[in-house]
Length: 259
View (cartoon, rainbow, N blue to C red):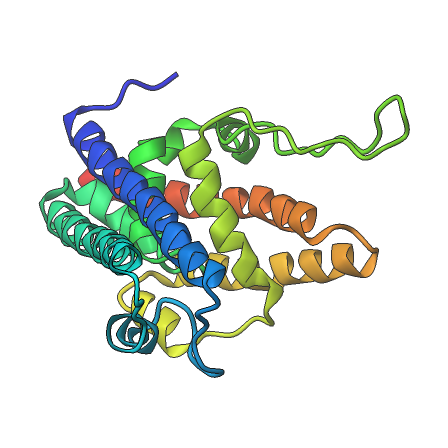
């Protein structure tokens, strides 16, 4: 059990507000896209959904003869744009809140961004949901906080069981999203290299080890014919172990410096 202090609780509320805004954005996009599909309106080949070109296509080239349908298009479009603006405001608020966060929190959030698939929003979510990571004596304890990730292999009727979803859903969501990036070969791109600037060599080594181990794990399970969603679940569980290792490394260094 962990009772968040004022700083963690405030940041957690802001992060969860953004998560709610993302869910509203998804629903608004679904309403608009399904409305267009019902009437046979499809963008030209090469225009990816929800890019700037896609939005321009909806604004400028999609029109309906019936006024009621045109009002519907405009209303759905307004909701999508409103959701985009709302998320932008919340993300800017998160960036400002990080600057005002206690120094130990900032250091852990920065260090976690050294991992592939974990940028600022994900790192802030992890720290705000977990608090002090070194309070977990072992990585398995942290894994338990995210829930029982083990998929049941067999049930009585011989069918595959479902993945359990107990635990912290907010933490599990960001870790699962990050886990998908480990299907790619180990590499340090421009964005990741920039995020790793100023990090200690120990943290960089943990992040590099994570790339090799988790990619190998992904390829091994996929090669064995496992369902990709369950494979990513297994990779995400192991990713939590590397998150624990980095958090403990940074927080222990901070403790030694303060003495």
